[in-house]
Amino acid sequence: MCVTLANANHVFRALADPTRRAIFEELTRQGEQTVHALTRYAGVSQPAVSRHLTVLKRAKLVRHRREGRETHYRAQPQALAPMVDWLDLYGAFWRERFDRLESLLERMGP
Amino acid sequence: MCVTLANANHVFRALADPTRRAIFEELTRQGEQTVHALTRYAGVSQPAVSRHLTVLKRAKLVRHRREGRETHYRAQPQALAPMVDWLDLYGAFWRERFDRLESLLERMGP
DNA sequence: ACAAACCATAACCAAACGGTTATGGATTGT
DNA sequence: ACAATCCATAACCGTTTGGTTATGGTTTGT
Image (cartoon, rainbow over the protein chains, first blue to last red):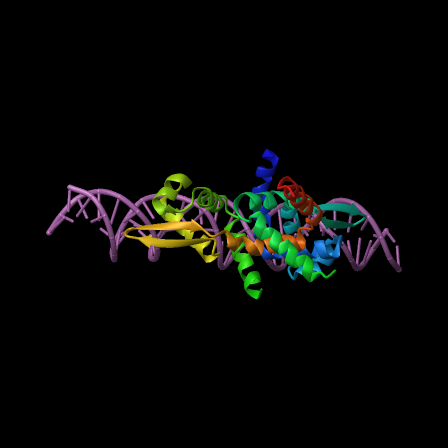
């Protein structure tokens, strides 16, 4: 719980940058990716991607797995918990979120 | 919806700074506050607070109301919607959130 | 009328950020 | 053995950021 608060700052900061959010989104949608693949996707240089991944790693939003000369990264959505907790406390009320959930489930069909 | 995406960046950026989060939290907990009161709370100079409030205002996370020589600010939690939406899409928190919701509804009785 | 209070903006500054190119270490393919 | 690939780190650079003090406009209190 103190861990949560300590990490909250890292999570908020990491997701403040749109490129970093895009990388995290890509990893969430497409699953595990190499740095090479992410570089092609992100539209910035490979070192830039590497450092973005380092920031995401610090926030525990991604994990990496080395395999030969390539490093595979995967999203770690549990690390979003501090942000969700914060929203629970300071923003989104249950009623509102329930409505949203309902409408989203509806859109997803039966 | 495009509006949501456009604003998402502002919201994420605004909440990336701990001082700004603290101000928003204070406004959420204690309700409307003057800049003077927020300055006492935030532990930074009054101009710093004013500019933080400007950033929060840009993200529509706060509204202001002038009353004589003082400006009252209030939190606007609906503006967190883009962040909640983003978490819905990329957080993959369905299971956990659904559990939480379920247990809450249970506690609320039949 | 005048002093004080409240707030926003301007001007300034050090530090952090996000990008780049250069480099080198480890691994793979030929 | 050698060349090429993958990745991380270093070095560098312009811009943004978060803070400060200074200033001025408006409103309030005496």
